[in-house]
View 1 (tube, helix red, strand yellow):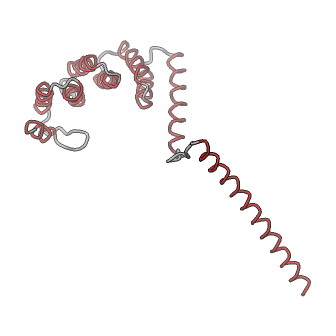
View 2 (cartoon, one colour):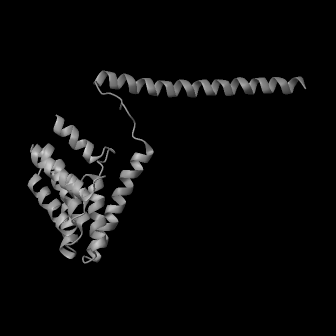
View 3 (cartoon, rainbow, N blue to C red):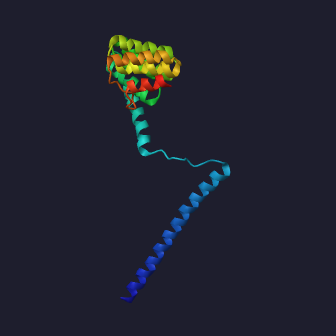
Length: 198
């Protein structure tokens, strides 16, 4: 019985020693990285990329590749072109998004939502007049299309610096829907009141 206790004690000491060696080894590696970054002036990332962010961009890439193959196989499929344009939109690939939307609109030119999304992409690349044309086309297809009217006001107000035209566009939006709201939840009516006071 005494022998058994001695063996267990010895085993405990060995495992403790192994644990301490592993801990020291890991600490040494980490200290080396930190010291090397300090010496070379590099900084450790302030915020690590989360697994979900990495998977999202990876998932978008996979979906884009799948849709690119789908439109190559079936170039007359309007819905796949639209979805590809939306994927490019979500990925910040404005030029590619515009090209995909143009293909979709060549097949079906009466989709107000696609005209509006293409207008947003034109705004993103600084082609403000083209953005206005897209929003106008959306409204000509669907006179009650609120998003295109709201976005047109945004371009006039913030990009073309034409406050009066922005007010006129948003007043027309209120004619379509007196309860229209901005994306932040503020009513367009209240937004206009604030704008006119400023």
